Amino acid sequence: RLTSAPVLTIPDPSRSFTIFSDASKQGLGCVLMQDGQVIAYASRLLKPHEQNYPTHDLELAAVVHALKIWRHYLYGGRCEIFTDHKSLQYIFTQKELNMRQRRWLELVKDYDCSIQYHPGKVNVIADALSRKVRGDFTYVVTQQSPLIQEFARMQIQAVDALFTAISGSVSASVSAMQLQPTLRERIRREQASNEFIRVMDAK
Image (cartoon, rainbow, N blue to C red; front, side, top):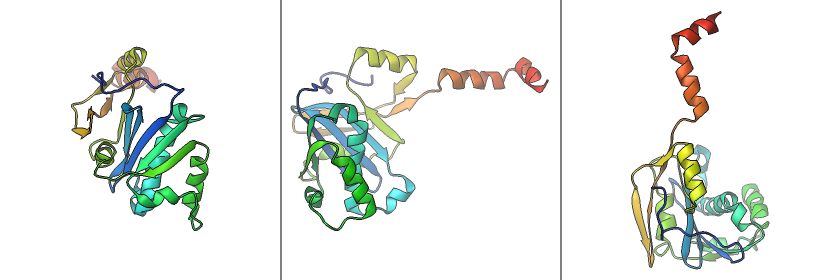
């Protein structure tokens, strides 16, 4: 199963959100929470050019990644972002920023959010997500029946859990989603192997 209660909860747009983000030399990881309950997890591997980023930029990239993918939850609301990189607390007041940092900061300013320091040893879930090296993308979303049915229609399935992250009262097994071919791709593949269609195409 992609999700199972009580690991994930449905968000309340009238309340503030909390994000825990982290970055490593492998990837970016973040957790969206509300009132101590997990709403969603997300992570991705670093792109080749991002592997040359300094630590400060990687940690800021993790924050930007979270704001982008959860924009539909966060835009117009209040959120607190926790990172284990202390200098990010002062990103809004730093005078010397490179062009990449300036561009990202403009995006961050679109949100009603604050960035606070959180020790890495406490932020184990986001840390584990950022260090996930198998697969290209992990995104575990809130358990909602219509969404689960849509996943089934699209033939999206979750492989075995890769790891379990535990932080205080929050315990979650994070699985990678394996995307199966879409209907259009399956039709194209079947047509390519059909002798009659190959003959017709040749004409």
